[in-house]
Amino acid sequence: MDKELKLKLKKLAQQLKPVVIIGQKGLTEAVINEADVALKAHECIKIKISGWEKQDKTTMINAICQQNKAEFIHSVGNMFIVFRKKDA
Image (cartoon, rainbow, N blue to C red; front, top):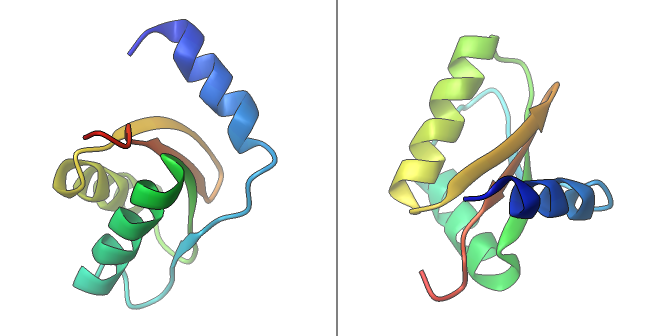
């Protein structure tokens, strides 16, 4: 993905609210499925992960991206932006 598109998606995501929230149960099949549904509907989504160490958050986002054929765009604190083209 080129830098221009990533920058555009980061700007777009600033106004988004998180549509997937990962809490103390961590990454479950239901969370992965919910991310898939959200990506089908919106292409660019924001995911919030609370109560986990940084490395755990990174592992969870990588797993969501891998299993949903999505691309990690950016993160700030507990918020992660993920993108997948609708035709993917």
